[in-house]
Image (cartoon, rainbow, N blue to C red; front, top):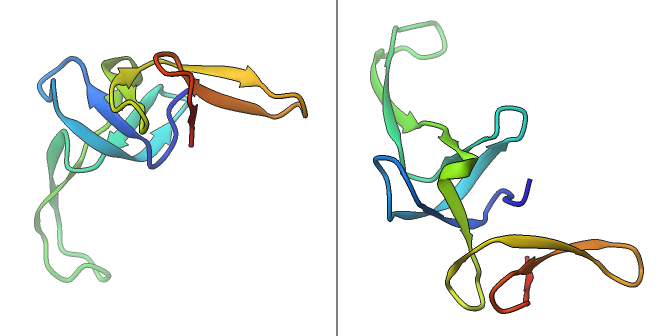
Length: 103
């Protein structure tokens, strides 16, 4: 998986197409991720002992990994990340456009 938590991404398809956001959570088993304030869904909750007041709660819904592209922090363009191995054996992510390391 090339996208990690706190990466900036651009949505390239779906109802949120063209919007940018920060990744909140990544679910590699389902190939999905949550993006801050995008793909908002409404959840109807019932009052419980922990949550005294019920009602409608809005939260982020998962988006498929294939519908987003990583945004490089250096060149500020949507790009694909490439894994490269350094001399000491550690693997880093590199921007395909500008060849800069992605944090």
